[in-house]
Length: 208
Image (cartoon, rainbow, N blue to C red; front, side, top):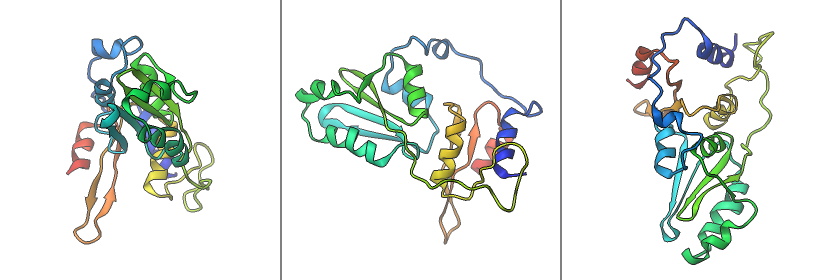
């Protein structure tokens, strides 16, 4: 059975010990709560694969998952336009068609998880479609073949592997940690866990 299939099976297994925290009033109001940078970063806390970039000259921040967006779309439609304007030109830039104003936190979070770039400005919050993870077609594993279920295998770079996971699990509760293993090799290790479905002991040991 492939490693990819085992990962998703573990998320839905009823035998796992669940440590879900009670739903807060703030979480219940995500549908209507006005989107802010602070709340978005709070919802996506402990996601080491999340990118947050500031543009202090125009009081603007952008948030996105680098492995889910097209580098060309990100550069041409978001970064370069923001770098080439002054603060008094920001409102005119935001009238461009790729900037879609978004009012509530739920839509912003879903947009980021779906490969869009969230743009936070003094004039409001916007989402720019930029989905396009750079990767070749992922082939079925030749050593861990399965008859049913997903046929993808974790044989790519870690960025592509994370994109495979986040394309299927569009949840802010999917957390990714990052650290290095080995005094000489300094191998990057990025354990992914689903908050609330992962046993507390497993989560703790993965950080040790």
